[in-house]
Image 1: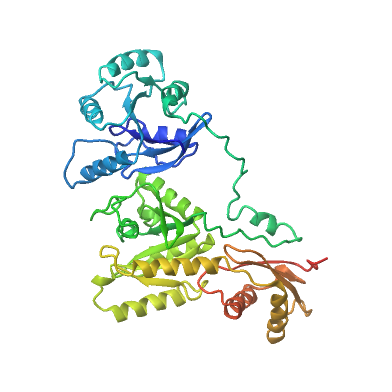
Image 2: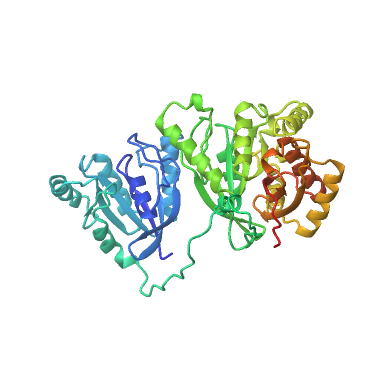
Length: 470
């Protein structure tokens, strides 16, 4: 990346729309309600042939207290320290406001290069009037754009040109990055299988999403892990709205930590912003490798916690449970018994889910939680040799043959692991559609016990008998 561009301005001027336009995808939540963005977030962006880092920030307001707006301003000021160039955005439809004037004066004191963008300039009448007013801010030549329609990008490119590197090397074409499960449909629809395993490259960050119900301490946990006030926290439920990704390293290993919005029951999601926040959290789970489900130690595994856990398992992610606020739990023995009981009987599809009791606020057991996450990640990447699998299958079948179908034996003939992340196996049977779920669970439980694959989902695909080695 050649430089970092921070997008700054008062609420509802279109900063997140510009951010999404430069990122080339819908990363930030957008709504007409002012103040949707609260934490600053960064991503890789581009404009024509140039790549750079972009930062979306909360709307600037004149608040210096500990209110949500005051904390939002502190987050924006923290983002400004990370940037090389500022894109100051005003609303062309409303013209220059006193708040715009105040923050234009503030930006001039920051000793950062500033580009002034007049957004929402969809027609010439708006553009002419707004540009004339914008010159009065004393930030140099303004550029008129419409982020929603993609107009004015050429002029923005021209004003950014002085900050592009002089000798830009051509990026290597690495091709499309394959998703974790892009080839699963091919596995399910074909009978000729070949094992595929994503290499665990230590240079590639492990993606960890932090999820849970509102106000269980997800943002506090992220701040405790990175030892910085990176995201907003407070006693109010629902502070986090966007999924915020933070790059970090632990014991020489790169991580991408993602803080997410609290996920309430669908029936309680009442407004459009919360709905989009929940969708963003679900997307974070889908793109993660390890998901840390944060629970309140005084309310362990309520119904919504279990629903979130089941969704993580269905997505095939590596699940780790963090029981937060453990220092405030009075009867720790009873709480542990409740936790272990819920893990055993309410999440029976995964045996021996890994967990850690923590206090995110006081930084207790954070190191243990991270080690637990790494151990679970290793299990999620586990491969079982095919030869040993088929000898094992013969023994499993001899102990407990598959139920008869119309008086005839339903032989299970071969088994092979075709994928990791999570461990995925294919079982060839004489009549796959007649193989009951109870027998499939018998095979999965046997794989867990005999090949030491606890704590992560196992996928079993059953196919009609055909020798996979021919």
